[in-house]
Amino acid sequence: MPSKRLSVVVTRRLPEVVETRLTELFNAKLRADDTPMTRGELIDAVQEADVLVPTLTDRIDAGLIGQAGERLKLIANFGAGFDHIDVSTARSRGILVSNTPGVVTEDTADMVMALMLGVTRRIQEGLTVMQGGDWAGWAPTALLGQRLGGRRLGILGMGRIGQAVARRAAAFGMQVHYHNRHRLRPETEEALEATYWESLDQMVARMDMISVNCPSTPSTYHLLNARRLQLMKPSAVIVNTSRGEVIDENALTRMLKTGQLAGAGLDVYEHGIQGNPELRNMPNVMMLPHMGSATEEGRIEMGEKVIINIKTFDDGHRPPDQVVPAML
Image (cartoon, rainbow, N blue to C red; front, side, top):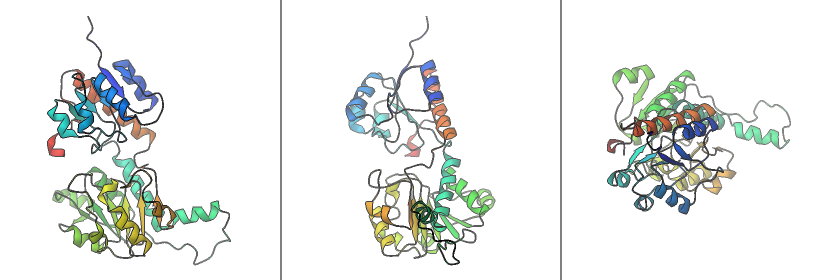
C-alpha cells in the first residue's frame, strides 16, 4: 500500500512548472492568487501542513511557530534569505528549516552592475527626460555621468554574490576591495584580484562605490550606520541588493539630500516595501522593487531546490539545504 503523501502548503504563487511538479509529488495546497497570506491563513497553514513553503513576505516568527500542529516538520523556504523565519524556535519544536542558496547568485550580481551603471551614468534621469518629452537635443555637457573603469569598489560581504559582483566589476576595469567576516583564501583573493580590508571603517572611507552583499543578521543590523556613512567620500555611490536593515536608511536619506553622498541604487529597503518616501524624489537615487533575483530561470531553479529539499526529507534524509545554527 503506498505511503500517505505529504501535505505541503505553499504561501504564494510560484512558476507553473514548479506548482505542477509539487502537485505530482505531494498533496500540495497552492495559493489561488498572488498575494501574501494573512496571519490567520498562515496559522491555518502551520496547523494543517506537514511542510510549509513560505517566501520572504511571510513572517514565520515564534508566535506563529508556537501555534503549529504536531504534523509540521519542515519549513522549506522559497528563497535564500531566512531572516523572516525564527529558525531557533523552529529547531526547539523539532521543525527543520531549509532554503534555496546559490540559484540567485548570478541574477543578483547582474542587478548590482545594473544599479551601478544606472546611478553613475544617470540612466534614470535620462529616462525621465525622454518619457516627459523634454529632450532638447544632444549637448556636450548634458547628463554627464562617470565611468566605472578605474573606480574603487568596496564589497561588503564576499560570499557567493559578493564574489560574482567582484568578477563582473573586474571586467569593467574596477578595482575590487572587500570586507568580510572571514578573509578569503589567498588563491581566491588572487583569482578575484580583490584587496581585503580588516577594518570596515577604513575601507568605506576610501571607496568610490560600496556594494552591500551581506545577509541580515543581528550583527549586520545598521552595519552602515550614520557614523560609517559619514566616513564615505561625498563623490561615493552606495548600492544595496541584500537587505535594507544593513543600512540606516534615514541617515542615508539625509546624506543624499545634503550632498554628502553622490547617489544610491537600492533594491531593498529598511522601512517597508516602499522605502523612505523622500528617496523617490531624488534624481541621484535609483529604486527598484526587489528585482535582484527576478528572472524566470532563477525562480524555477529556486522551486526545484524547494522540491529537492522536501523530497529528500520525505525519503527520510536531511534536506541538502537545511539551515543549521552555524548559519545564524
